[in-house]
Image (cartoon, rainbow, N blue to C red; front, side, top):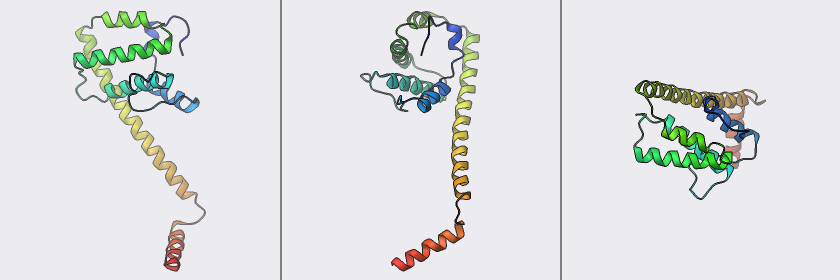
Amino acid sequence: MFTGKPSSEKYEKYDITLMINLIRNLTDIQIRSELPSPTQVSVGDDLSRIQYYRIKIAHMDSCMVEDGDFNIYWEDIAQALHRLGGGLCDEDNIELRKMQISESQKSDSLHYIHMQSRTVANEEQLVAVTERMMSLELQQNDPIPKNIKSKYYSNIFIICS
């Protein structure tokens, strides 16, 4: 998953949603939508953890996290990254944890989080519309017209009754 020493600049280019969808659809790794228990530490469990917290934070209404919750999230994600990256991210995680954030960075981050939240909502709507279109295409490609099929099934029901 990681090659060589990662740099902080590269992290900003990661699209977690895309990465998780590619892994879920192109590998045998099982990624769930619920948070795995602390004893579950497989690659799929750690990716599930990262996806869970990404969704949880992206869908927060207030964009504020209590200190206690933040510490739990950070530690859980840092441990998952340590296992996935073999410790290559540990120094970056420590540096990021100690970093002070200015008010303008906070404002920019909140704006970015709101934009991401809207993007996630749009992606979910797109998935729903795509699934509906596929369902309609299947119905449309059915060789037996819907009105004839319903008469056929109602006749069978009458005969069997």
